[in-house]
Length: 104
Image (cartoon, rainbow, N blue to C red; front, side):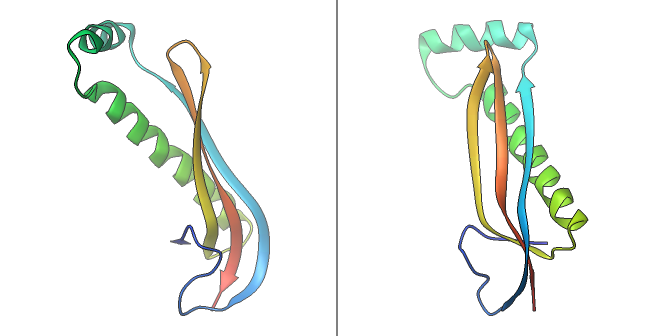
Protein backbone atom coordinates (compact mmCIF):
# COMPACT_ATOMS: atom_id res chain seq x y z
CA UNK A 1 0.00 0.00 0.00
CA UNK A 2 1.37 3.39 -1.01
CA UNK A 3 0.64 6.10 1.57
CA UNK A 4 1.33 9.77 0.79
CA UNK A 5 0.33 13.14 2.20
CA UNK A 6 0.18 14.70 -1.26
CA UNK A 7 -2.83 14.63 -3.58
CA UNK A 8 -0.97 12.45 -6.08
CA UNK A 9 1.57 9.62 -6.13
CA UNK A 10 4.74 10.71 -7.93
CA UNK A 11 5.26 8.70 -11.11
CA UNK A 12 1.81 7.08 -10.90
CA UNK A 13 -1.53 7.89 -12.45
CA UNK A 14 -4.73 7.74 -10.42
CA UNK A 15 -7.02 5.40 -12.35
CA UNK A 16 -9.89 5.20 -9.90
CA UNK A 17 -11.03 6.97 -6.74
CA UNK A 18 -12.19 4.48 -4.14
CA UNK A 19 -13.33 7.00 -1.53
CA UNK A 20 -12.68 8.24 1.96
CA UNK A 21 -10.89 5.86 4.32
CA UNK A 22 -10.05 6.14 8.00
CA UNK A 23 -8.71 4.28 10.98
CA UNK A 24 -8.70 5.26 14.62
CA UNK A 25 -7.89 4.10 18.12
CA UNK A 26 -8.30 5.43 21.63
CA UNK A 27 -5.34 4.79 23.92
CA UNK A 28 -4.58 5.33 27.58
CA UNK A 29 -1.70 4.42 29.86
CA UNK A 30 -1.73 2.29 32.97
CA UNK A 31 -2.39 4.37 36.10
CA UNK A 32 1.06 3.51 37.51
CA UNK A 33 2.77 4.90 34.43
CA UNK A 34 0.45 7.88 34.58
CA UNK A 35 1.65 8.69 38.10
CA UNK A 36 5.29 8.47 36.98
CA UNK A 37 4.49 10.71 34.00
CA UNK A 38 2.96 13.25 36.39
CA UNK A 39 6.16 13.31 38.38
CA UNK A 40 8.16 13.83 35.19
CA UNK A 41 6.22 17.02 34.49
CA UNK A 42 7.73 18.51 37.64
CA UNK A 43 11.34 18.10 36.48
CA UNK A 44 10.73 18.39 32.73
CA UNK A 45 11.88 16.29 29.81
CA UNK A 46 10.34 13.74 27.51
CA UNK A 47 7.64 11.51 28.93
CA UNK A 48 8.71 8.32 27.17
CA UNK A 49 5.68 6.27 28.24
CA UNK A 50 3.40 8.74 26.46
CA UNK A 51 5.67 9.02 23.42
CA UNK A 52 5.55 5.22 23.07
CA UNK A 53 1.78 5.18 23.59
CA UNK A 54 1.20 7.79 20.89
CA UNK A 55 3.55 6.03 18.46
CA UNK A 56 1.67 2.74 18.99
CA UNK A 57 -1.64 4.55 18.54
CA UNK A 58 -0.51 6.13 15.26
CA UNK A 59 0.60 2.76 13.93
CA UNK A 60 -2.75 1.17 14.87
CA UNK A 61 -4.74 4.00 13.29
CA UNK A 62 -2.69 3.84 10.07
CA UNK A 63 -3.03 0.05 9.98
CA UNK A 64 -6.81 0.29 10.31
CA UNK A 65 -6.94 2.95 7.58
CA UNK A 66 -4.92 0.64 5.28
CA UNK A 67 -7.34 -2.23 5.98
CA UNK A 68 -10.27 0.05 5.10
CA UNK A 69 -8.54 0.98 1.82
CA UNK A 70 -7.74 -2.65 0.96
CA UNK A 71 -11.39 -3.52 1.53
CA UNK A 72 -12.30 -0.95 -1.14
CA UNK A 73 -9.81 -2.36 -3.65
CA UNK A 74 -7.30 0.47 -3.36
CA UNK A 75 -3.53 0.18 -3.73
CA UNK A 76 -2.73 3.69 -2.48
CA UNK A 77 -3.99 6.32 -0.07
CA UNK A 78 -3.46 9.98 -0.91
CA UNK A 79 -3.91 13.19 1.14
CA UNK A 80 -3.27 11.27 4.36
CA UNK A 81 -3.67 13.20 7.61
CA UNK A 82 -3.28 12.31 11.28
CA UNK A 83 -5.16 14.03 14.07
CA UNK A 84 -5.38 13.56 17.80
CA UNK A 85 -7.79 14.64 20.50
CA UNK A 86 -8.43 13.98 24.16
CA UNK A 87 -11.59 11.97 24.65
CA UNK A 88 -11.37 11.79 28.44
CA UNK A 89 -8.80 12.30 31.18
CA UNK A 90 -5.60 10.42 30.27
CA UNK A 91 -6.99 8.97 27.03
CA UNK A 92 -6.36 10.19 23.49
CA UNK A 93 -7.85 9.31 20.13
CA UNK A 94 -5.69 9.15 17.03
CA UNK A 95 -7.39 9.16 13.67
CA UNK A 96 -5.71 8.59 10.31
CA UNK A 97 -7.67 9.46 7.19
CA UNK A 98 -7.24 9.98 3.48
CA UNK A 99 -8.55 9.17 0.02
CA UNK A 100 -8.24 5.61 -1.24
CA UNK A 101 -7.27 5.30 -4.89
CA UNK A 102 -6.13 2.76 -7.44
CA UNK A 103 -2.94 3.85 -9.21
CA UNK A 104 -0.89 2.45 -12.09
